Length: 448
Ligand code: FCB
Figure (cartoon, rainbow, N blue to C red):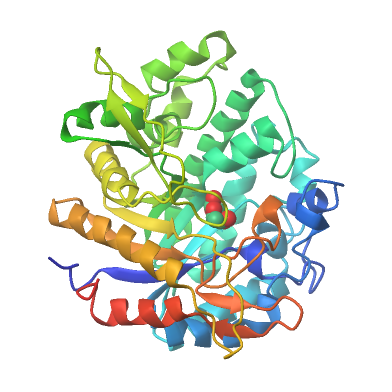
């Protein structure tokens, strides 16, 4: 059992989490700059002002990707760096940063996979209503057109949005992420509809602006329910592909419109009167040809079938393994998540994020020993390899993350990197896991 020879081995990061240089070279403010200044919003008041200072250390960081041996790097573009007001004026210096980065990556033999929006929404557009404003779809299309026009002579792989579930639910319902809103359900659904329209209009802009044939998709959270026993597979599938509760934490409310041009019937029932009025033509905009689906998977929920075949969450025993973030270690999620998504949507799947936060530090010997990250990744990759062997069309795996970085409302508390970052000195140290991952890439997973 092995991965196909063209399997894409990558690492991932995002703009706000690593770049820093928040007020450098004409970057406009994003909602995360503002959120970080809200008392109590982010762990110990941390901000992304400096982060990993990647904006000034990109050459060194591309070198690290080379040392890890990754063939691909998933990065995101900071919308307010390229368009400080969100629309209109393009900031040439901001765009030039990504232009150089792409050149550096290609020169190092690393394929860029570019996400257009990874949560750092332009503050200026937020003040015009943000995702609650239907025009937000046009704003995103304008921005996308500009970026793709500039970089698609060299960048082939594109993603529109990262994890709509997270920035909508945590940002607009729970208030724990930027912009910190706690909207009623009807407005959450309206914002979601506009996000889906933005995806659709973004895909159209992408194809229109592309200077060469491109491969385009988006990267969603994959909320995985997996079977405890073989008898529970149908229940797990129903759980993974259903909307059971009146909130945005699911797969199909986001992906069915995109891949099938319709909201799922169970969701329409669950959301009932809170559902906005939807123009039929909108669904045609939202459903654009998709070359792939990116799924971000960190964990899953074991379920069993009840007497009617419905999924019931299994309680994990006390002392169940968890990461530093207290996320459960659930390798099965990397088998069943891609499998259920591939079954339902029929497109190639990429694991656009997977990894863990761990209590890593630099040891007395100057090295960073992180056996948990090696064991975690090994277990998850074995599950993914099994999915491949069972016919799931998974094309690549991007480890989150290239390096320790700003973990949103958890600030710098959670270390997800293959590379350790000392946030005082900006010193980078390859962790043991980075050297191990290199061997996995070299052997194409045969040594797992
Ligand atoms: C995902 C985000 C990513 C990172 C990981 C740990 O939800 O897409 O930016 O924070 O979680």
